[in-house]
Amino acid sequence: MAAAIELQGVSKSYGSVHAVSSLDLRVPEGSVYGFLGPNGSGKTTTIRMIMNILVPDQGSLFIQGRSVSKDTKDVIGYLPEERGLYPKMKVAELIRFFAELKNVPRSDLERRVRYWLERVDLADWGAKKVNELSKGMQQKIQFIVSVIADPPILILDEPSSGLDPVNANLLREILLELRSQGKTILFSTHRMEEAERLCDHICLISKGHKVLDGELNAIRNSAGKGTVRIDYRGDAQILRRGPGVASVADYGNYAEVQMAPGGEPAALLRWLAPQLEMTRFEMQAPSLNQIFLDSVGATTAVPAAHGG
Image (cartoon, rainbow, N blue to C red):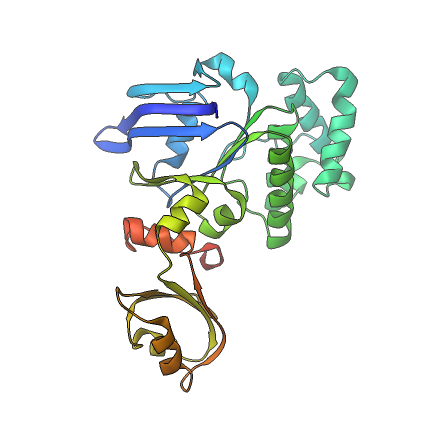
């Protein structure tokens, strides 16, 4: 499969701080590619190099086989981490302004503006000024700006920032629709559960270095089946004392238990049954969050989406 975006040995430093180090990345056309890692891991710096906002110290970047330049921006819809909206402009007026910058045909401009405002449930807000909108609404307008020109590639830096669960789910639905249309979507996030629901490919980075890269299902399968998900009520400390337990990632009403080599889930179940009220006890491939914790260590990883 051809690469929509490709990085070869890309590095970027700020003084003595190595933000990105020898990063290789290949985003297949038509994929939803999660660029994952904790805050400060180098995600935004990498995206800004792809967008030709920053110049790498070394390495090469390609968009659809062409070296990154000001011209390659034309095929990309970009949602930056920091909003770039004009607060005093009216919403529909602002969308038209950015659409014209992207050479959207005037004959189709009004239809697109109406469609996207309706699609993100903001049809009644077109005449309002941007600064009258909530942060979540402004994020949805920023998203419209990134897709209004119907680009083949979308690069979204923390796209669900500021969105409540309902609107985060709406965004997820839209991204899956765009994937079905053949769009390539690269998005960065530190929310592992969000990535797990959306992505078919992922790259995990920490402190500017690539930790894992590939198809999500293959990565999860290669991590083995030594994880037990337990939905429970009671004291999670009991789980940590169970036979054959190596570690426990506790999320309040459920936990992911990593079994030690040779540990028997059946023995753990028998031991727990009289001590803990359980509604689910299931062997499964580890979650993406657990894979990240195992890959980079709890000191640099982040909690799952519901943990902030």
